[in-house]
Length: 265
Figure 1 (cartoon, rainbow, N blue to C red):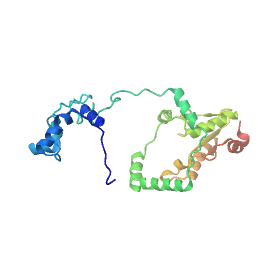
Figure 2 (cartoon, rainbow, N blue to C red):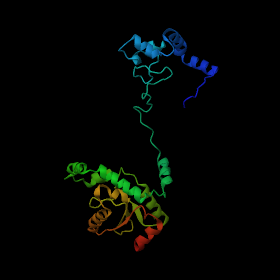
Figure 3 (cartoon, rainbow, N blue to C red):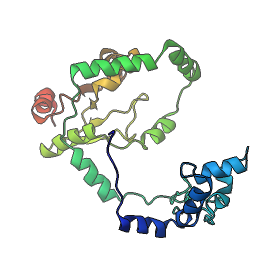
Figure 4 (spheres, one colour):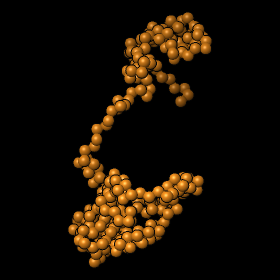
């Protein structure tokens, strides 16, 4: 950039002089009195050693600076500004309007059917980062905090009711609707057995439960998908239930229909 010159037109200079009155009022006089290379701030600092010029901007520039419009009682540090930096918070103390249900449905449908597959390299990188975060010390703290804690069915149901249906579950629900399968979504805490809340259950009297999951989340914290399935099958089979599992790569109509086979209805 060396050697470039930034020329200003006469009209631009006149506009600057009109919009910034302290330039017109003081700069010319200051340049004449103390030299062109000394700014107004430096001039004021020399006259008032040890003081903060930002607390006396009116004196430095010879213009009355307005107060911040947020009501904090402080003055802005730039003549053209209405607020100090970070003080313009229009939503402070107010509640943002809620998103209408039809808009939420539209947003979910916009993601329905889209595939967000992570490559094998990306999957390994995510797992490595999670291992770094979940250090043995942090896991032990969590274990000691939750040890001996047993939630009541009402507590579990109340907590799960706050969980909205996921995009993966919505994709599975669409397969159910398109193929008239006799299953319904109960993953919001509507059905709990032995402290477990399946995602879908059969509505024709058969004890069949369906779990839809993302592999990444079942492998966090040194967990495995095999242990997850083994635990679910063991606890639900004790009550006579049969469980089907579908991960994010298996939620498609062809695979679901072939996997359910004779248990479609």
